[in-house]
Image (cartoon, rainbow, N blue to C red; front, side, top):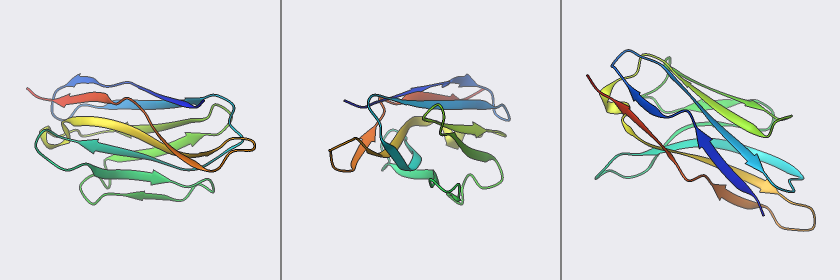
Length: 120
């Protein structure tokens, strides 16, 4: 049984920074892509950033140059460094990971979400 747990959300002023963490736990054999999604009230969930097992990354146009995704495979953890935050970044941020457990098929897992609020 795999669990993803996010941390690092909170309330910040415009222009501030936050670092989100997402740690996967359980009997994990391998982790492929990891990603961050976000969803604001009344809006569809959007993909913020992805990072592959080989380290290649992708970012939504709205966060390019401000956010940086990284991963620590020894800790089964993905991070999202968020700088120059804007009110438009306010949302619940969810971690996603494609994980293989021994003798089980590849499965997509989601964290519970962490609230990021950017406001004066």
